[in-house]
Image 1 (cartoon, helix red, strand yellow):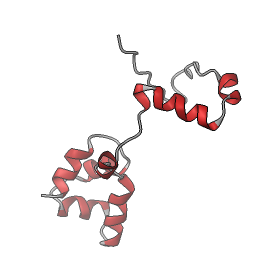
Image 2 (image 1 turned 60 degrees about the vertical axis):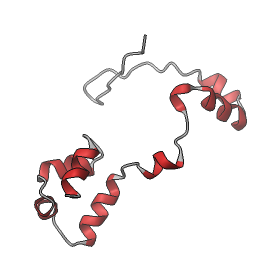
Image 3 (image 1 turned 90 degrees about the horizontal axis):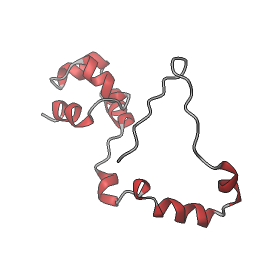
Image 4 (image 1 turned 90 degrees about the vertical axis):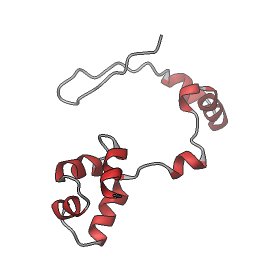
Length: 104
């Protein structure tokens, strides 16, 4: 059974308790930390292909600024909505939907 995702909203939710054994971590060498991360199936490094497909919200903002467009102008010129642009430029939501609307 998978663990339940814990959502934490600062100022609203009580801070979840850390299950990290910080004393053990402090005693580990960099090599041991690296090996422990590689042995964790949920913490595998991304391949070059996966990194290339990654979505960088800052790149979207940089493109908009390079074109000297406001958020609204950029969204309208791409057939998107300003709200969808704002969500995507924060890194929230589904970047594939945002990119599909911009790349049409």
